[in-house]
Length: 491
Image (cartoon, rainbow, N blue to C red; front, side):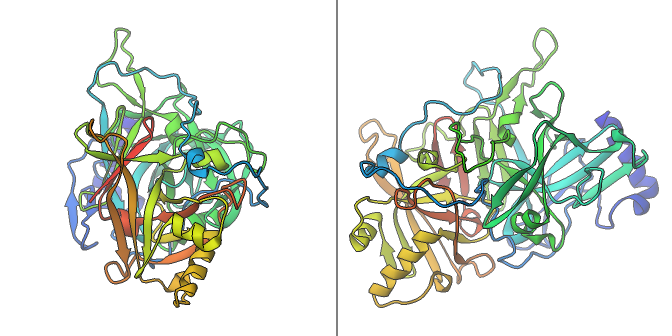
């Protein structure tokens, strides 16, 4: 059915494009280059969306996409913990014994992974997006979805009609059904009731629907036999916060956090299936019964440099020849609702002031050393500091004779903790992954701001969080091995 729609699309382009499609449609699927949004790189296309074109729109203000990072919970007052809980670093390094894994998928027996690479487009607030195609029996609509390593769900911008058809579509092919014909609707009711969620610092509601969607590579599929998956529809408040306000075009979010917290936390709503928990990669070759085997997505790579590509894989994308890796710490052990991709920070420098967790412990005379942890968030423009971290940083700098607030910082540089993979030095800590940005180097995207995040069970017994957005990530390739819990960032 889907390919019949594509054939019809080609005919419509030839005979009635002006009547049915937006004026920005052209005959090539193109990607803006890194240096000039008006320059384009053309990709060889598959037949599913070969003629869909990137809207050549001006970038939003650098603060427009303040934060898509997801607390996915209801704001509450943090609770206290037992005084005996003093080794926070060991807690964060605890290897989880189980993760939510709702998919019963095949295990890839050979060592050759199946990988899928999708081209990315420059979108609002300097974020990167991928095309998602939603279909029903009589409709086809295309969204630009921000690729977001800071949230877990596939969510669409707000809808304000009675037919569950979200606004913010990039292009609508056609709808030959009447308005009250359910077969024309892209989304249908799911078993999940609406929830109150937090994106950034904004609380709003998400309606959970069932939808059919696909991507430009048809090996990337919904694993459910019904070919439908759980999709969230944001209300207006969350649409504005999470997708840059939709000044030019409301965007969807494609969350790449795969795992929720398997331990139910009362202050959070019941977890919904994540995008990666419902998606799979199918094999190229059919099995004996003419069905393709489905494999779990275990690793992804996000290239923010000029090539701008998202790669998904059934096996690790971190080469075995890589000499050092960053171990992911598990923030769920101290109350986080989802498994944010987080690594330890050896030191962080704001302008000319270098700070470590040890120096902050000495300054605050704290009984617990609170590690500094960086969270990778490709749905964010700049740099965010969890409120209690921002407060202690400002106090620390004031004690050094610098009374500026975080908003006034002009540069941030970090040394991220890595460990060697070499046999002779395996497990030893090294600090060779350095990442930085500044208003001078990146005036369009760089900023530093505090944010209130309700992630942890205790304010005292929690790490200091710095969230790294596109002002850092556009400098290289972030690779996450979800199963092995390791990461690399290569500039």
